[in-house]
Length: 160
Image 1 (cartoon, one colour):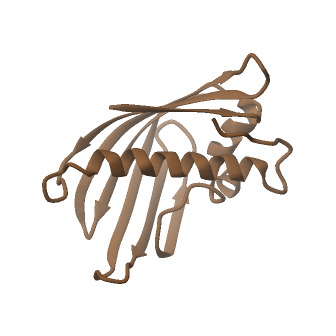
Image 2: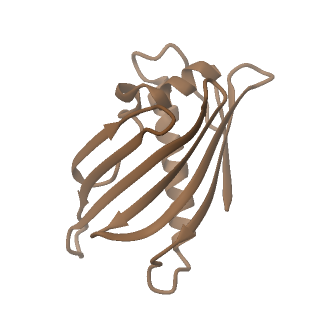
């Protein structure tokens, strides 16, 4: 289990919209690689599927698949969902993620992202798997901050 927190200058409503609005979500939630496809249904019982092909210089291409289902959505406050990550058709990990949004005392939003992750098929000895998932979450939240601060957004964002 791990928690990542961020202070965002955007209001809780704007941050929530970055999760719920599919067009805005595509600006920050992306699988690595090429040829990515996405389907997003933001409602309790809905979810997201995504596929891509990831290639590095020294390895064969990997087929990535992401699948999620929303369990609880409290507008402008909380999103709870489960997701699975597959590589080449093998379930690597699954996680319960809780994203909480609170109005910050000094304007903006305090975002708290907590994951309870289970590694189903770890890599080699598994020592780097949690670091990978945690690092990916931090990168994703960096992308969220950039998406909120980019043209078309009415808010500015600061990372802490």
